[in-house]
Length: 133
Length: 133
DNA sequence: ATTCTGTGTGAGGAAAACTAACATCAATAG
DNA sequence: CTATTGATGTTAGTTTTCCTCACACAGAAT
Image 1 (tube, rainbow over the protein chains, first blue to last red):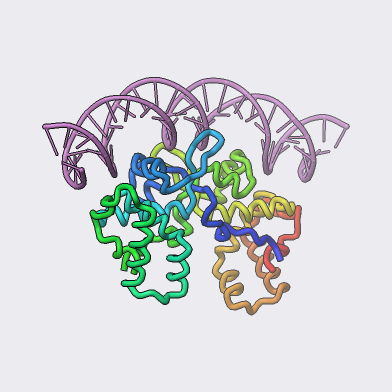
Image 2: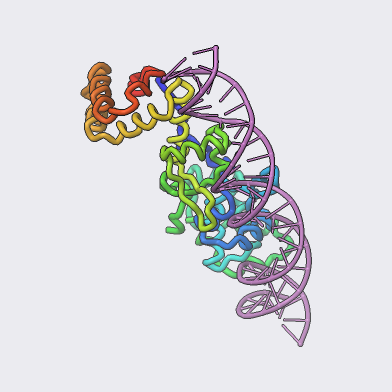
């Protein structure tokens, strides 16, 4: 009944990684990573000495951001999509899997119109529906 | 069919963590971690700039080392135990789970006597059999 | 034609990590 | 009992990594 401590028990939200590691894992530049933080898409921890420390969740988020950018979505669009992900209506729909693509698109459109009174056109760059199956 | 990249796919042998993170994860001092490396119990990677980068496997190994030290095994004993772990005979026995405690102890004793012609007494500090159940 | 967006780059400064050396204190050996 | 060894602490001096801030720039949007 010896030690039960294991590195595999790591919480995905634990701040473990310096920016250099995250750069390698995501193939993003430090500039890009900091820019996305500036736009509040990630909130890495800070050490006492003000160094950013990233979690595995942060890495996943950055990979999603990279993906969307590569597909032509701009920052504003990504922000909206992330907000939407937190939306209880969307989450419930996704969880129950009782939505068709069309329905999900409608939910998303409503949410966008609802919260996007400003810069209404900012999402036109790409078809967002691609990002939810 | 979007991105399949995930931080959860991380190989446990990937060098991800700086020493500060490993210190927190293991509650070991930098001095201790470097000392164990000096004694070849871990082999962390190095960045281009000579910084140590640790894998999750390294963290696990360090936790094992800590465990053994706390139970009174000295470095020499830990080295032997780690060598034993790599021993095909022991591995096979463990894998097949067809060994009793007594049998495993005998295998280990033989291995110790075999490879430990020098400093035969260095392991006396603690009962090694505790470390294999 | 001008503004906005996302990213590159460089300067200057601070934090974190490195090696090497010496200090310490308990356990072991002689 | 004294001397040695083993594991760790501490400190000094250096190098690397990361930080912020500022300016540059190309392509897209207005």
